[in-house]
Amino acid sequence: MSDERPQLQLEDDFTFACHKGLRCYTSCCRDVNIMLTPYDVLRMKKALGLTSSEFLDKYTSLVQVPRKALPLVQFRMDDEHDKKCFFVGPGGCAIYPHRPWACRMFPLDEHALGGFQVAVTGQRCHGLVQGQPWKVREWLMDQGATQSKEMDGSYESLVSHEWMQNLGEMDNPKVQQMILLALYDLDRFRDFVLNSSFLERFDLDEDTIFAAKTDDLALLDLGFAWVRFGLFGQKTMKLKQPPEAPAEAR
Ligand code: SF4
Ligand code: SF4
Image 1 (cartoon, rainbow, N blue to C red):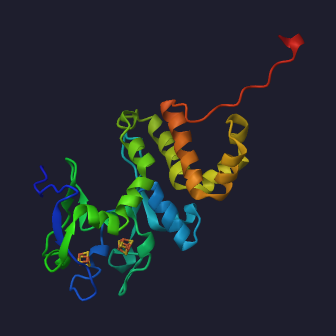
Image 2 (image 1 turned 60 degrees about the horizontal axis):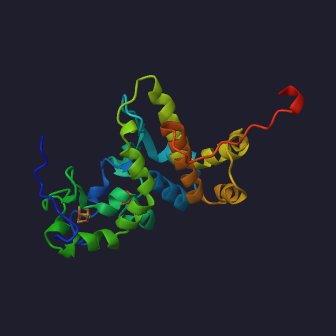
Image 3 (image 1 turned 135 degrees about the vertical axis):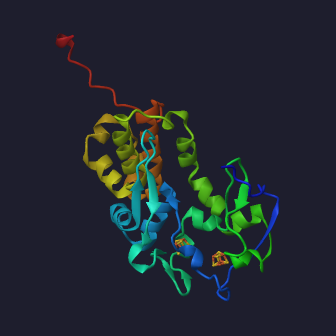
């Protein structure tokens, strides 16, 4: 089915303002389908003081897509409370500065053919009717969606790599586990880097190892490098040279 909603470009205008006085206030934070990026998870688990595994267990579910490499990490809604987002309350979003990229975009989303579109109608989202004029570019900057997208640039280029599009059934679970570990479950990935044979196999300088120990963003960069090395054979990581054999053994 074709998407007939008008396509907007960065310099196009739309009308929008969201505030507590609207009848629809917080209604859009219920039963919503949000796929999280690695950077979304990194930012939220940090803000909530959870490990990545705790965050993934509590607030996400995994959508397996047969023959696709990429695991889809979906933001869970609270089934016991009318499928509301776990973080919405009468005062709005409790994790507003740390909310996912998709929440920052709303009421816009990306158009299938490029550019953007308004995601809902004014009947549902009253802020589209009574709002102030915005250029798409200004809106994305104001909400931190542009900055978020830039932080997720490595993810975007990974997702669009042609290798990711069609996998054999056998490879699918192994690849998904690797991607989940390296890009989403960062605390477990840190443990894997520091406490497995990872550092014996890969040639990492001291600064990279220190950054991976102490900085989630640096660790995520290492995760992307490892995934690209492992899946696409790109030279994003260097293997250690095996020790030279003694002369008499040659
Ligand atoms: S539906 Fe639109 S106007 Fe209403 S709370 Fe959500 S974003 Fe704001
Ligand atoms: S994270 Fe915040 S903005 Fe996003 S759905 Fe939940 S409450 Fe709404």
